[in-house]
Image (tube, rainbow, N blue to C red; front, side, top):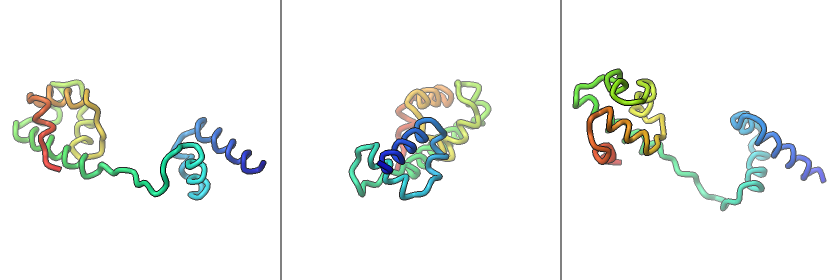
Length: 119
Protein backbone atom coordinates (compact mmCIF):
# COMPACT_ATOMS: atom_id res chain seq x y z
CA UNK A 1 0.00 0.00 0.00
CA UNK A 2 2.85 2.37 0.80
CA UNK A 3 4.30 1.84 -2.69
CA UNK A 4 1.01 2.82 -4.34
CA UNK A 5 0.75 5.93 -2.20
CA UNK A 6 4.27 7.01 -3.11
CA UNK A 7 3.58 6.31 -6.79
CA UNK A 8 0.40 8.36 -6.62
CA UNK A 9 2.19 11.26 -4.96
CA UNK A 10 4.93 11.22 -7.56
CA UNK A 11 2.35 10.97 -10.33
CA UNK A 12 0.45 13.92 -8.88
CA UNK A 13 3.63 15.94 -8.42
CA UNK A 14 4.93 15.10 -11.89
CA UNK A 15 1.87 16.26 -13.77
CA UNK A 16 0.99 19.24 -11.57
CA UNK A 17 4.34 20.99 -11.24
CA UNK A 18 7.35 22.10 -13.17
CA UNK A 19 9.14 19.10 -14.68
CA UNK A 20 12.58 20.44 -13.74
CA UNK A 21 11.60 20.45 -10.07
CA UNK A 22 10.46 16.87 -10.46
CA UNK A 23 13.80 15.71 -11.85
CA UNK A 24 15.65 17.33 -8.98
CA UNK A 25 14.28 14.63 -6.69
CA UNK A 26 16.43 11.71 -5.71
CA UNK A 27 17.62 9.68 -8.70
CA UNK A 28 16.43 6.22 -7.70
CA UNK A 29 12.84 7.30 -7.01
CA UNK A 30 12.75 9.18 -10.30
CA UNK A 31 13.97 6.24 -12.36
CA UNK A 32 11.66 3.74 -10.68
CA UNK A 33 8.68 6.02 -11.14
CA UNK A 34 9.42 6.73 -14.79
CA UNK A 35 9.85 3.03 -15.51
CA UNK A 36 6.38 2.42 -14.09
CA UNK A 37 4.71 5.27 -15.95
CA UNK A 38 6.43 5.20 -19.33
CA UNK A 39 6.80 1.82 -21.01
CA UNK A 40 10.24 1.80 -22.61
CA UNK A 41 13.00 -0.75 -22.71
CA UNK A 42 15.70 -0.74 -20.07
CA UNK A 43 19.28 0.13 -21.04
CA UNK A 44 18.15 2.22 -24.00
CA UNK A 45 20.17 5.38 -24.35
CA UNK A 46 18.38 8.50 -25.48
CA UNK A 47 19.80 10.07 -28.64
CA UNK A 48 21.89 13.15 -28.23
CA UNK A 49 21.60 15.56 -31.14
CA UNK A 50 24.13 18.08 -29.83
CA UNK A 51 26.62 17.47 -32.64
CA UNK A 52 23.89 17.62 -35.27
CA UNK A 53 22.55 20.92 -33.95
CA UNK A 54 26.06 22.38 -33.79
CA UNK A 55 26.83 21.32 -37.38
CA UNK A 56 23.55 22.72 -38.65
CA UNK A 57 24.09 25.97 -36.76
CA UNK A 58 27.61 26.48 -38.09
CA UNK A 59 26.30 25.81 -41.61
CA UNK A 60 23.62 28.49 -41.16
CA UNK A 61 26.26 30.91 -39.88
CA UNK A 62 28.51 30.22 -42.89
CA UNK A 63 25.65 30.93 -45.28
CA UNK A 64 24.72 34.14 -43.47
CA UNK A 65 28.29 35.43 -43.33
CA UNK A 66 28.89 34.36 -46.93
CA UNK A 67 26.02 36.58 -48.03
CA UNK A 68 27.33 39.42 -45.85
CA UNK A 69 24.21 39.56 -43.69
CA UNK A 70 24.08 40.43 -40.01
CA UNK A 71 21.70 38.80 -37.54
CA UNK A 72 19.59 41.97 -37.53
CA UNK A 73 19.25 41.90 -41.33
CA UNK A 74 18.13 38.27 -41.29
CA UNK A 75 15.75 39.12 -38.45
CA UNK A 76 14.16 41.86 -40.56
CA UNK A 77 13.73 39.56 -43.56
CA UNK A 78 11.98 36.77 -41.69
CA UNK A 79 9.75 36.36 -38.65
CA UNK A 80 12.49 35.13 -36.30
CA UNK A 81 14.12 37.06 -33.49
CA UNK A 82 17.86 37.71 -33.77
CA UNK A 83 18.53 36.05 -30.41
CA UNK A 84 16.69 32.93 -31.61
CA UNK A 85 18.75 32.88 -34.82
CA UNK A 86 21.91 33.25 -32.73
CA UNK A 87 20.89 30.29 -30.57
CA UNK A 88 20.30 28.22 -33.71
CA UNK A 89 23.75 29.16 -35.02
CA UNK A 90 25.34 28.19 -31.69
CA UNK A 91 23.58 24.80 -31.71
CA UNK A 92 21.41 25.52 -28.68
CA UNK A 93 18.00 25.17 -30.36
CA UNK A 94 16.27 22.20 -31.90
CA UNK A 95 14.21 23.76 -34.67
CA UNK A 96 11.05 22.81 -36.54
CA UNK A 97 10.44 22.53 -40.25
CA UNK A 98 8.58 25.85 -40.29
CA UNK A 99 11.67 27.53 -38.80
CA UNK A 100 13.81 26.14 -41.63
CA UNK A 101 11.45 27.78 -44.13
CA UNK A 102 11.60 31.08 -42.26
CA UNK A 103 15.42 30.92 -42.17
CA UNK A 104 15.56 30.18 -45.89
CA UNK A 105 13.35 33.21 -46.54
CA UNK A 106 15.56 35.38 -44.34
CA UNK A 107 18.79 34.17 -45.92
CA UNK A 108 17.43 34.27 -49.48
CA UNK A 109 18.16 30.62 -50.26
CA UNK A 110 16.07 27.54 -50.88
CA UNK A 111 15.34 25.29 -47.88
CA UNK A 112 17.30 22.41 -49.40
CA UNK A 113 20.46 24.54 -49.24
CA UNK A 114 20.07 24.82 -45.46
CA UNK A 115 19.82 21.06 -45.11
CA UNK A 116 22.91 20.37 -47.25
CA UNK A 117 25.54 20.19 -44.51
CA UNK A 118 28.01 17.62 -43.19
CA UNK A 119 27.41 15.99 -39.84
